[in-house]
Length: 53
Image (cartoon, rainbow, N blue to C red; front, side, top):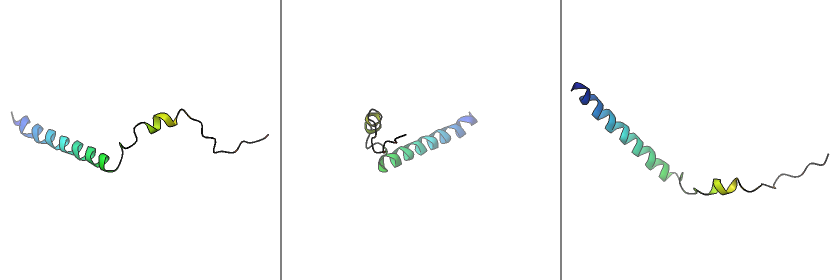
């Protein structure tokens, strides 16, 4: 029973930390472009000049 007096505040604290981290990620723009990386890998970047040997 004494374990619950420790585990309940710890669980609530961890939940609060997770919520704060999620809200920070939303505010900083982590979820703005979800499809960009998935589409970017399909195309070659031709920005680099071709080397002639």
